Image (cartoon, rainbow, N blue to C red; front, side, top):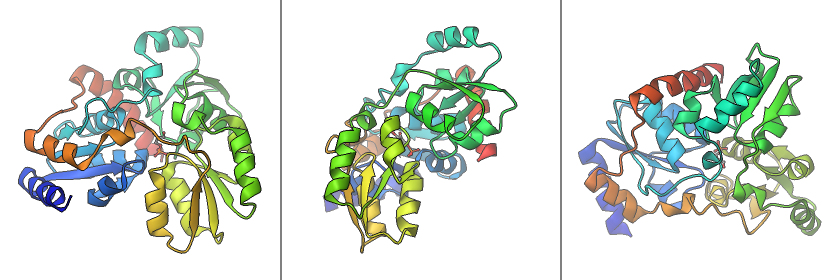
Length: 300
Ligand code: 13P
């Protein structure tokens, strides 16, 4: 493994590349990354880095966001098959049909979506800023796509009418209220921190709901010593590194995203050597999707 790490370091220098990793990536990938963060932080970083090449250790929609925000850079996705079933639950035709039913509604699009869908939307959001994005709009009605659970979470904090798309994350969906209650009974002192992609009854029963970045912040700032975590297991790495005195347990053994786990050091080295797979959003789509992402970045 040390050989691979050395090779990646050399290739990074040669290519003037940075590695951006999502909080769900494998420990070794997070350790080699120049920056690790949630979806919002990755977008901001991709937009602002002066590197010529960005290796996006995450899933396709994250690489697409980087390409939309930084078209002059080469965006590499180490495994071209790293997709997101939630993002794949919506397409442009379906969104257009839905928009026709609610012509007065603004379209808020979670970043876990294809670039073409972002291009058809008024504004994007991530789970860090979804409430602020919805509240920033003058519209009374919001078509919120594609995650129905995040839509439901947002609806708790706004008077606007939220019309959800029926998509969801199959990994977060695996956490049930029964599992949460069992875990809580076994560790009654533990704080329960979950992602808003979890089912509404799980969110309702949790102590805190937020993006991966917000969960990390909550754990850092909390006086509690034990936490039950309701999001993808990759986050445990940073939680444990940043809080050596605290204990972290997963709410469900099913919290593993197979797509996030496709990236490894060998694929990162290979993509930097071969300079592919490149993710590039076609300009006609990119220019429109950029508006939606840029509006989001201005809000929060
Ligand atoms: P965050 O923005 O909270 O990192 O969410 C990423 C994600 O894809 C959740 O499934």
